[in-house]
Amino acid sequence: MTKCTSHEQITYQAYCDTSLGGEDPKTLTEAKESPDWLEWEKAIKVELDQLEHMGTWQWVDCPVDTVPLANKWVFVRKYNKMGELLKYKARLMVKGCAQWPGFDYTDTFSPVVRLKTIRAILSLVPSQKLQIQQMYVKGAYLNGILKENVYMWQPDGFDDGTTRVCWLRTNSLRPQTIWMQME
Image (cartoon, rainbow, N blue to C red; front, side, top):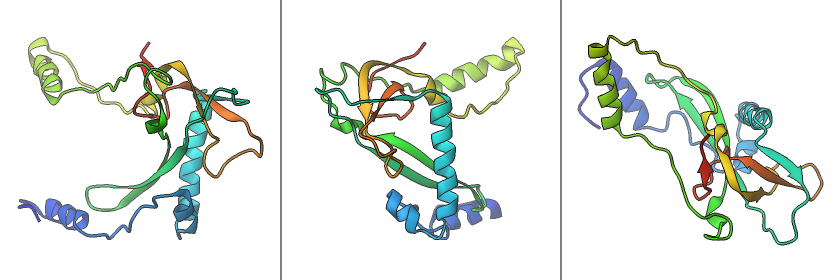
Protein backbone atom coordinates (compact mmCIF):
# COMPACT_ATOMS: atom_id res chain seq x y z
CA MET A 1 0.00 0.00 0.00
CA THR A 2 1.32 3.49 -0.83
CA LYS A 3 1.79 6.21 1.77
CA CYS A 4 -1.37 8.33 2.03
CA THR A 5 -1.94 11.62 3.80
CA SER A 6 -5.71 11.75 4.30
CA HIS A 7 -8.54 9.46 5.35
CA GLU A 8 -10.07 9.82 1.86
CA GLN A 9 -6.86 8.63 0.16
CA ILE A 10 -6.51 5.73 2.60
CA THR A 11 -10.08 4.60 1.94
CA TYR A 12 -9.59 4.82 -1.82
CA GLN A 13 -6.24 3.02 -1.74
CA ALA A 14 -7.62 0.25 0.50
CA TYR A 15 -10.57 -0.16 -1.87
CA CYS A 16 -8.29 -0.36 -4.91
CA ASP A 17 -6.06 -2.94 -3.21
CA THR A 18 -8.98 -5.33 -2.60
CA SER A 19 -11.62 -6.92 -4.74
CA LEU A 20 -14.61 -5.34 -2.98
CA GLY A 21 -16.31 -4.63 -6.29
CA GLY A 22 -15.78 -8.12 -7.68
CA GLU A 23 -14.15 -8.89 -10.98
CA ASP A 24 -15.61 -7.48 -14.17
CA PRO A 25 -16.84 -10.03 -16.73
CA LYS A 26 -14.33 -10.89 -19.44
CA THR A 27 -16.91 -12.14 -21.95
CA LEU A 28 -20.56 -11.66 -22.82
CA THR A 29 -21.27 -15.13 -21.46
CA GLU A 30 -19.73 -14.21 -18.10
CA ALA A 31 -21.80 -11.01 -18.03
CA LYS A 32 -24.99 -12.98 -18.75
CA GLU A 33 -24.17 -15.43 -15.93
CA SER A 34 -23.42 -12.58 -13.53
CA PRO A 35 -25.95 -11.56 -10.85
CA ASP A 36 -25.52 -8.05 -12.35
CA TRP A 37 -26.71 -9.11 -15.83
CA LEU A 38 -29.59 -6.60 -15.90
CA GLU A 39 -27.10 -3.76 -15.31
CA TRP A 40 -24.68 -5.10 -17.94
CA GLU A 41 -27.59 -5.48 -20.38
CA LYS A 42 -28.55 -1.82 -19.84
CA ALA A 43 -24.91 -0.79 -20.44
CA ILE A 44 -24.86 -2.82 -23.68
CA LYS A 45 -28.08 -1.15 -24.84
CA VAL A 46 -26.61 2.31 -24.12
CA GLU A 47 -23.52 1.45 -26.19
CA LEU A 48 -25.50 -0.02 -29.11
CA ASP A 49 -27.92 2.94 -29.10
CA GLN A 50 -25.01 5.39 -29.22
CA LEU A 51 -23.30 3.49 -32.04
CA GLU A 52 -26.56 3.38 -34.01
CA HIS A 53 -27.29 7.06 -33.38
CA MET A 54 -23.83 8.01 -34.69
CA GLY A 55 -24.23 5.92 -37.86
CA THR A 56 -21.24 3.78 -36.96
CA TRP A 57 -22.06 0.96 -39.37
CA GLN A 58 -24.32 -0.08 -42.16
CA TRP A 59 -25.67 -3.62 -42.49
CA VAL A 60 -24.47 -5.17 -45.77
CA ASP A 61 -23.94 -8.55 -47.34
CA CYS A 62 -20.34 -9.59 -46.87
CA PRO A 63 -18.22 -8.98 -50.00
CA VAL A 64 -16.81 -12.20 -51.45
CA ASP A 65 -13.13 -11.25 -51.01
CA THR A 66 -13.52 -10.02 -47.41
CA VAL A 67 -13.02 -11.63 -44.03
CA PRO A 68 -14.93 -9.61 -41.42
CA LEU A 69 -13.18 -8.76 -38.19
CA ALA A 70 -14.32 -10.27 -34.91
CA ASN A 71 -15.48 -8.14 -32.01
CA LYS A 72 -15.78 -8.44 -28.29
CA TRP A 73 -17.52 -6.73 -25.42
CA VAL A 74 -15.45 -5.07 -22.72
CA PHE A 75 -17.19 -4.65 -19.37
CA VAL A 76 -16.08 -2.28 -16.60
CA ARG A 77 -17.63 -1.14 -13.36
CA LYS A 78 -16.87 2.55 -12.72
CA TYR A 79 -16.30 3.69 -9.13
CA ASN A 80 -15.76 7.06 -7.50
CA LYS A 81 -12.72 7.73 -5.29
CA MET A 82 -14.59 6.49 -2.22
CA GLY A 83 -15.18 3.13 -3.85
CA GLU A 84 -18.89 3.64 -4.50
CA LEU A 85 -20.23 2.12 -7.69
CA LEU A 86 -21.16 4.83 -10.20
CA LYS A 87 -22.14 2.86 -13.27
CA TYR A 88 -21.72 -0.20 -15.42
CA LYS A 89 -19.99 0.41 -18.73
CA ALA A 90 -19.96 -1.85 -21.79
CA ARG A 91 -17.92 -1.11 -24.92
CA LEU A 92 -17.97 -2.98 -28.20
CA MET A 93 -14.47 -3.37 -29.59
CA VAL A 94 -13.26 -4.60 -32.98
CA LYS A 95 -10.42 -7.08 -32.80
CA GLY A 96 -8.22 -5.05 -35.13
CA CYS A 97 -5.26 -7.35 -34.60
CA ALA A 98 -6.62 -9.57 -37.39
CA GLN A 99 -6.04 -6.88 -40.02
CA TRP A 100 -3.25 -7.17 -42.60
CA PRO A 101 -0.94 -4.19 -43.26
CA GLY A 102 -1.28 -2.97 -46.84
CA PHE A 103 -4.55 -4.84 -47.30
CA ASP A 104 -6.93 -3.76 -44.54
CA TYR A 105 -5.01 -0.61 -43.61
CA THR A 106 -2.03 1.43 -44.74
CA ASP A 107 -1.14 3.43 -41.64
CA THR A 108 -2.04 3.79 -37.98
CA PHE A 109 -3.04 6.82 -36.01
CA SER A 110 -3.70 7.22 -32.33
CA PRO A 111 -4.45 10.76 -31.17
CA VAL A 112 -2.69 11.50 -27.87
CA VAL A 113 -1.75 14.58 -25.92
CA ARG A 114 1.26 14.97 -23.67
CA LEU A 115 0.85 16.29 -20.16
CA LYS A 116 3.53 18.90 -20.95
CA THR A 117 1.30 20.27 -23.73
CA ILE A 118 -1.67 20.61 -21.41
CA ARG A 119 0.50 22.33 -18.80
CA ALA A 120 1.87 24.75 -21.42
CA ILE A 121 -1.63 25.68 -22.55
CA LEU A 122 -2.84 26.07 -18.96
CA SER A 123 0.13 28.30 -18.17
CA LEU A 124 -1.21 30.82 -20.71
CA VAL A 125 -4.52 31.17 -18.88
CA PRO A 126 -3.50 33.73 -16.22
CA SER A 127 -1.30 35.85 -18.49
CA GLN A 128 -3.94 36.02 -21.21
CA LYS A 129 -6.81 36.43 -18.72
CA LEU A 130 -8.59 33.43 -20.17
CA GLN A 131 -11.33 31.36 -18.60
CA ILE A 132 -11.22 27.58 -18.43
CA GLN A 133 -14.25 25.38 -18.85
CA GLN A 134 -14.39 21.64 -18.56
CA MET A 135 -16.73 19.46 -20.56
CA TYR A 136 -17.25 15.79 -21.16
CA VAL A 137 -18.08 14.64 -24.67
CA LYS A 138 -19.67 11.23 -24.54
CA GLY A 139 -18.51 9.18 -27.48
CA ALA A 140 -16.02 11.74 -28.80
CA TYR A 141 -14.14 8.88 -30.49
CA LEU A 142 -17.10 8.38 -32.84
CA ASN A 143 -16.04 11.21 -35.12
CA GLY A 144 -13.15 9.56 -36.98
CA ILE A 145 -13.67 8.68 -40.66
CA LEU A 146 -12.31 5.39 -42.00
CA LYS A 147 -10.47 5.47 -45.33
CA GLU A 148 -10.57 1.68 -45.85
CA ASN A 149 -13.52 -0.64 -46.17
CA VAL A 150 -13.63 -2.47 -42.86
CA TYR A 151 -16.22 -5.12 -42.09
CA MET A 152 -17.11 -6.62 -38.73
CA TRP A 153 -19.25 -9.60 -37.77
CA GLN A 154 -22.50 -8.71 -36.06
CA PRO A 155 -21.99 -7.78 -32.39
CA ASP A 156 -21.42 -10.82 -30.23
CA GLY A 157 -24.71 -12.10 -28.86
CA PHE A 158 -26.86 -9.68 -30.84
CA ASP A 159 -27.09 -10.96 -34.41
CA ASP A 160 -30.23 -10.53 -36.52
CA GLY A 161 -30.34 -14.10 -37.83
CA THR A 162 -28.85 -13.20 -41.23
CA THR A 163 -25.33 -13.48 -42.61
CA ARG A 164 -25.06 -9.71 -43.00
CA VAL A 165 -22.05 -7.93 -41.57
CA CYS A 166 -21.38 -4.42 -40.29
CA TRP A 167 -19.58 -2.17 -42.75
CA LEU A 168 -17.85 0.28 -40.42
CA ARG A 169 -18.32 3.88 -41.44
CA THR A 170 -16.54 5.58 -38.53
CA ASN A 171 -13.66 4.74 -36.24
CA SER A 172 -15.97 4.29 -33.28
CA LEU A 173 -15.08 0.75 -32.34
CA ARG A 174 -11.43 1.63 -31.86
CA PRO A 175 -9.46 -1.16 -33.50
CA GLN A 176 -5.82 -0.33 -32.89
CA THR A 177 -4.67 -0.62 -36.49
CA ILE A 178 -7.33 1.22 -38.47
CA TRP A 179 -6.31 4.52 -40.06
CA MET A 180 -8.56 7.38 -39.05
CA GLN A 181 -8.85 10.73 -40.80
CA MET A 182 -10.02 13.48 -38.46
CA GLU A 183 -12.14 16.14 -40.10
